[in-house]
Amino acid sequence: MDYSFGSAVVILLLVTDPLGNIPLFVALLKPVDPARRLRVILRECAIALAVLIICIFAGDPLLTLLGVSDRSLNIAGGVILFVIALHMVFRSGNSAFGDAPAGEPFIVPLAIPSIAGPTAIATVILLASRAPQRVLEWTAAVAVAMAVTLAAMLFANRIARAIGERGLAALERLMGLVLTAVAVEMILRGVEEFVRGLH
Image (cartoon, rainbow, N blue to C red):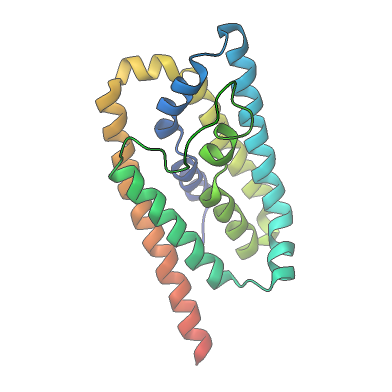
């Protein structure tokens, strides 16, 4: 599956899920001093951006070292993506990433795994491994997706008030449906490459 710059940005936005993360950000930043919230949001988004960019450049050599093939990454990434997508569609009161620690959030759970989660990491590694000559393009796609995420987080309270809880839930379910289709495509592509390798 060949990705264009635009499709890479869209998929990265789906897996980082800025709209779906708004309730989590609002809840976790509520006890934080309003004067520090901007700094916390900038820090968490910067950490997530750094993690994803490191994975773009270091992910493929790491996979080679571990002997992990593209088809394995396709299937594993698709399975993880499918689980996250199902959680988005059939959301319960619990987080998909477990309980969040008390106090001001630092790295966990906002930067990782809410933004730069396993699926986002697998996605950027997959992009870089399938087209290593386009790493600068993938880096730009990650930067665009993170800029949108940052904007969503900066206006999280306003967006939450404007759309409402039901509106956010409906949007997240819609994104989950799209993500389900992407996950199935990744799994099918991995299986197809595996079967092709047997012949």
